[in-house]
Length: 418
Image (cartoon, rainbow, N blue to C red):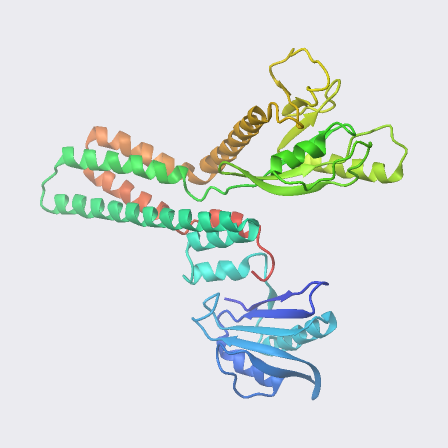
C-alpha cells in the first residue's frame, strides 16, 4: 500500500490538519517526526506539542498525534498534524514529507474521497455496516435519525451474520450427507428453499441508501408558498407578508414524513416579467433548484407553468373554486384545509421514487446473486446434490459483507481526508 495524505482546512477554521496514512511504509514514521520536529520519539496516541522546522528554522508550532499500526483509523501507521491554517506552511510540510519518500523511491499520493475509510475497510478495521454508519452520520443532520439508523444498522448486521452461519451449516450438512452416502434429498430441498427465501430478503434490504429527496414549493409571487412551507415544517421559518416578492432567496429545511427524509425548499416567486434585478437573481436560483428537485409542489392561480408532480390551489377559504381535476389539491394554509391529504400525497410519491431507486440499485448490484438463487431452484428439481453444494458456496461468497461496489458508491459522498 502506498502512503497517502490529506490537508483538511477551510477559511472559517483557525487551524489546518495534515493527515497521513503510511500504507506499507510505517517504518518511515520516525524519519518524518525527526526531520520535522527534531524529536527522536513521540508517545503513541498522545497529543504532543511540537515545533515544525524547515532549514533549521521554526516555521510553525502545533499538535502532533502518532497512531502506530494497527491501532489507527486506517489500520496503518498514521500521523496527524494540527497546525495554524496557513496554506503555504501546510503545503510546505507536505513537500518536506514527499521528499523523504522520494529519496526512498516511494510515491506519496493525495488521498481520494473516502480513501482513508476504504483503507480502514480493507484492513478489517470496519465492515460494510461501519462504512454505512459513517455515511449516514455525515449525510444526516438530524440527531434522532442518526440514533435510529445506528440501531437499525446493528440489527441488519446481526441478521447478515446469522444468515451466513445458516448457509455454512447447510453446506456442512450436505457435505456430511455426501461423505456418508446418505443423500437425504427431501431434507436438503426443504432447507435450501427456506434459506433461499431468507437470502432474497437480505438482497432487498442490502445497504439501500436512504436518499434525502428534494421537494420544492414553487409558484407565482404572493400565492402562499412560504405559509405552506411553514405548515409542512411545523414552525415559522419563512417570512410571511402580504406584499409581493417577500421571498427573494430560497430557504430549505430538513423534514421527515414517516420514514422518508426530505429536504424541503421554499423558493422565490416566479414573476417572469419582473424588471427588478434582485428578483431576477432569486428566479434564476429557483430554476436551478427546480432542475435538481425530485418532487415539485406548484401552487397555482391559473394554469401550471411546469410539469409538476403535485398541483395545489391555495386560499380556497377566500375564493370559490370548482373542483374539476382529481390531481389538483385544494387547500387553505390559514385554516389547515386539505393539508392531511397533501401530506399523504407527498409521502406516496416520495415512497414510489425511493422504491424505483432501490429497484435500480437492487438489479444492478445483485444480478449475479439472483441468477445463483434461480439456478438453485432449477437444480433442486433435478436432485443434483453436488451442484446445490457448489451454488451454496458461491452464494456464501457473494453474501460476504465486503461488497466493494456498494462501498465505492458510498465513498463518493465522503470528503478528502475521511
